Structures are given as structure tokens and as C-alpha cells.
Image (cartoon, rainbow, N blue to C red; front, side):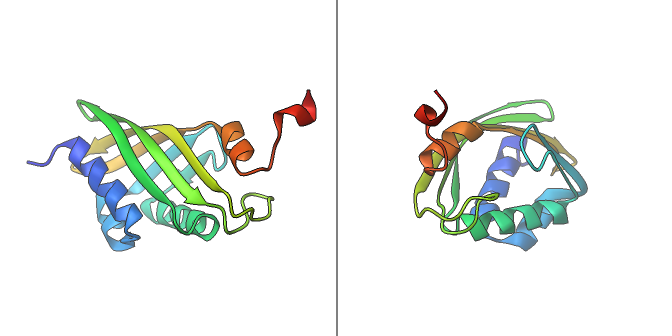
Length: 140
């Protein structure tokens, strides 16, 4: 039997490979993703795929790598590295051609062998600084 950590790893791999059909099989139809950042909620597995496809418009070379994952019951906590070059519009910011490398925390609930929920949190300010959209001394 495949572990919940392995399901999450397979989801990350399928996303990196842009294997959207595989992503849809790994995520429940009524999936929901929560975050304090925009978008604050993503509903359904199809909505999640659309979000990742839009993300690729901004970061076409995007890759995510699991740094570590911890499984407890139906929950998987993961520290994931995001790496991508901003070649498209990011929110309202023009492309910079700069690379963003950042770690984020993601928590997954896996039920019946598929991802049912996720909670994603990352350091937006760090990302804006790396991409050249914000300088700390601008507002000091």
C-alpha cells in the first residue's frame, strides 16, 4: 500500500512534469486549498490544475522539490522548495527575468488515497524582493 507521503510526492512530481491528467487522479474532485495569500481558496481538482497552469505562465521553468515530509495519520506536512524564473506577469508586476528560489510550508490531508485538502504558506515579501519588485530601503 502506498503511503500518504508517497501520494504527496507523486503529486509534486506530476505537477513538475505538467501531467495534469495524473494530478487529477491524485486529488479529490471536491479538493480545497487554503492560504493566507492570494488566491486564498482554490476549490476542486480542476481549479488546482488551472492555478498551476497559470503559475507556469509566470514561471515557465517552475520546479518544486520536497525538502522533507512528515506523515501522521491522514496529514502530511512538507517543506517544499520553489524555483522558477519570472518570464511572465506576476500579479501586477512585469516580468523581470529574475529567478525566485524560496521554501514554503504545505500541509496535505489525504483521504482514500487522494489529496482532499491543502494549506499553503510562503514568504511573499521575500519573493517580491528576490524578483526585484520591492526593496526594503524604499520604505525605511
